[in-house]
Length: 262
Image (cartoon, rainbow, N blue to C red):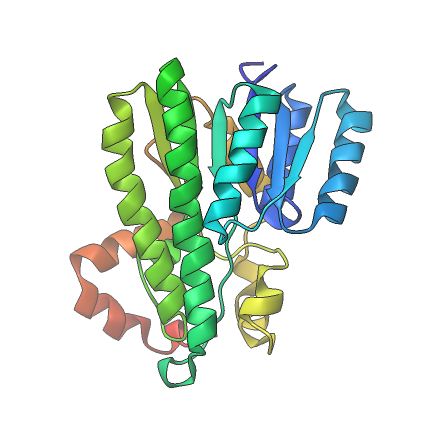
């Protein structure tokens, strides 16, 4: 019951892993604070959480790529909720394309959501947590941030950026009494692939290896308010990422056609 009464902010909370995290923290007695673009969806989830778990649940419409809106919403949030114990930076999306087919507008939007929005939310939350000398920032990155594969160049670049930022933030925040964790999952069964893999070919090829969104959410909630450096899922994929860091040429050759699943 370590989360009972705690306030947990979750970006990208209207679907997928973000939504599952919201329900999981509510189940453990915490107060979810939901952020996403779809206000109607947030309203439905918040109402269901309140009636199902008898805990408060707040929601705010926010597109994290709008940096001015990030500051405005968090300022209002702090005024209404007073304290934030955990921030889960979950908002993000990807589009899988070969480099020559990259849409530069999509490229910019991916960085605005996956990187700039995450940094903006972390910055304002850290200032709040530092005043209280306690808190936890959890950044949902990806195994793609450790090992890029064909057709995911821009998405992988955003997740490499998230990991670089998270590793630096962890050391800075430690001096302020704030924990910072990177969560690096492989592919998860969510609506993420409705955009990332419009053809459905990638999902068809890797469906049997996909992670369950509820299990990922439980793992994320389990480590809240603990000094956990990283969560890597699944274990076998993380072993591959570590081997890649040590022997990149060998892994790229051995991977062969397996890397062209998208």
